[in-house]
Image 1 (cartoon, rainbow over the protein chains, first blue to last red):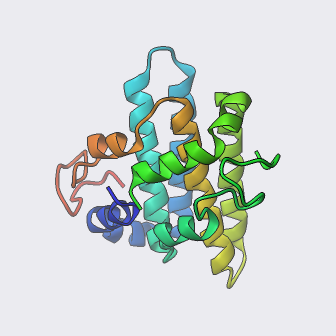
Image 2: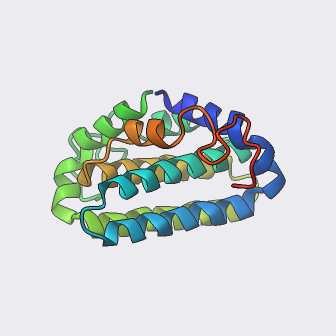
Length: 97
Length: 97
């Protein structure tokens, strides 16, 4: 699936709710999903729940991006054009991470 | 760009660093990027910085997924197969959000 398709899918399903809720409350939801991901990672043998929480983090990131008119494909292409944005190398040879 | 390609790009550039840092510290980095996104949203006329922070949130989500052997494409297809996972409708007709 293209990143743009994920963003469109979230727009098709949820934009009417997302717009009504607004940017800041949607950001709170995203943070809540990050917390659920953390919780899922605390348990052993929990692959399915972790996978589901990753889906939710991506989904709410896309919903928030829709509200802010951010094109996630463009964002990635601009910041990570195939190499590390700091050392300009792939694999990264800097101490960025 | 496919979601799988984003995940592979992060693997190619950063996996050697990500593996050395480990899962929990990488999660802390992801949370830090969520904070930076929040900060960028507080300012007016800040489209470029917001766009960059979205790229970082996606990048660190993909890095963490790589460490946990999560396939993000599979995660999204499993949880959001073209409609809301709760009301099974597109657009969502439930009070999920």
